[in-house]
Image 1 (cartoon, rainbow, N blue to C red):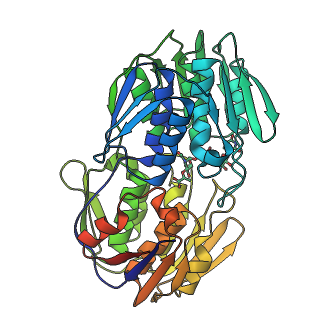
Image 2 (cartoon, rainbow, N blue to C red; image 1 turned 45 degrees about the horizontal axis):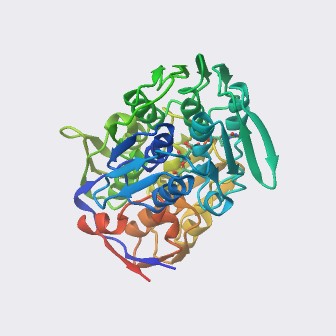
Image 3 (tube, rainbow, N blue to C red; image 1 turned 30 degrees about the horizontal axis):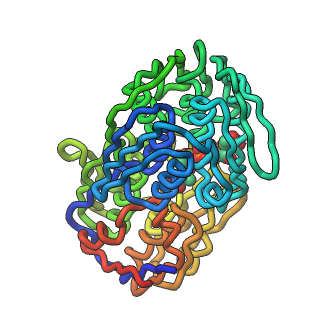
Length: 419
Ligand code: EPU
């Protein structure tokens, strides 16, 4: 199992480029199952979750050609197995994103239930309830969800009891080939949802309102091939901004979309970080004085992203005062806390709230990555810590960050991968 060895205490400097968004690329790849024509995608990050999704598409019968430069061509001329087996789904929960496209395209799908995950229970009941509203008949058998809609799906009003990102994407992909109109209410407004809608519209789908809480979809008979470039990864960009601030560096994060990062930028500015746009698609970050603690609560977009909570908590260990950090999206997303404590942080968890007292001098230590974003927080903490940190189980970080050690090394970090 690979590890990262990081010698901390160096200010990051220079440019760090951002890759395509993993969480947009995953549903966009699934959407390619909706047409028998080829779809060409650009800026697909070469990370492990994407390779998993590509294997899943191949399992269903699609041809997938992935080039090292991030261009991926998917051709689902025929779907021979409308299935997502447990072996794939257990390693990547987002596999449930093929459910909507498979039922819409073939009238049936068999998808393993994902089971629990490190950050919470993460059920898919809202995906299933939505598909039932569109006329699918759903059974559960031996850990699998079987969805059938032999006569095709039909449009309906689908209200989400709670906002779900992949649930919104899954239902939108199902509805584009359904008969008649579908209205999704209390839909997720994440930029990744908008990116999927943009791809679907290029394929010929009729969608209005993506990016708002009400999405209207008029079903069409068939979709065609197209090409599409994935949006930049706002979580990766945010992680680099925090890493730069943690190390009191001076960094230009390039190839990003500042508008997708407003809630983070506002919090960083309140904490005393000088961060803002420089030119187009770039953010400059510096720390002119000392950092101040600010409170933060995770929320659905445009609120503060849960995927940046762990990294922001690491930053707050360097700020003077007390910061209350509240996690409202996932019930178990503080796995990084015990590891940050081993590096000298002063954090107490009470239910869904973490209370961070700072500033502390972090010191390197052997630590363990527990999930994707928790690992990212350990990396940023290690960059700011005195001495050496060894992070075990970096396969978690490889699920979603493309060449993170190379990118950070270019900005002056001392980080190496050890096998
Ligand atoms: N939920 C339900 N029932 C459902 C679906 C969701 O109760 O059917 C609950 C979840 O358990 C959670 C909340 O609703 O408490 C929100 O979950 P959501 O469905 O929005 O999460 P997701 O779609 O499974 C995506 C990202 C996550 C990100 C969340 C929240 C992808 C592939 N994954 O997950 O990304 O944290 O939205 O923004 O888009 C990551 O990249 O590290 C990651 C975990």
